[in-house]
Image (cartoon, rainbow, N blue to C red):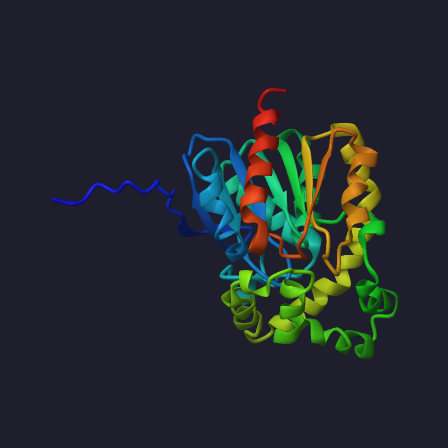
Length: 297
């Protein structure tokens, strides 16, 4: 006779792929299919793997869906698709993915690259967005640190030399810098996180995809005023929860959300860029607080 466990049940995450926009989109999913939906959008250089600890913490009350963006993780783009890697293209693919799954209303959790992707989605489909959680997901120029200076140089002069100067961001040392800078206890960060990122981004041709996206990041900065106008007009329930020691996106970028959405909540955590690696419990609780309040509006 099987033993009856006294341990709390942990929702099981399942793994899928679906065709959308001519792309085979890999995604993780957990939670009841009739529950409120949270769409998790990862950033550079990672994938939906970054949400591995957050998903089961939310899935008891929410349907949680986390896709890998084209160029990342286990999403595959057929060569014959002729995909041009830009943030507009990533947003179109995510929009097609949302439509393929039949998601009518959903909250978005945006991080790093996921922010300009998710906010493009919000601009195009404001009625579908129930709330926004921005975890180190920037939408204000004051949120960009001086670490962005080599990218700014590339944007203004996209020469081969300026492109090559960014290749250090695509190395194991570059990834470890992102994961470990500003973290009080490096032992809290699972080494398979940045190691998996390296393995997936070292696939043939991927370095050039990443450098193309770094060049196109300038398009996101140009869209910041549009994102800010959306915050002012739509005033979505919004949580900006930030690793305060992030070397890329600094705290003024979190605080700025209040300027355009007075109801925005801002929380600064004692950690770095990949805040989920060290503060997943705090972030999960803050998300639940935001979404529980949003449902009573």
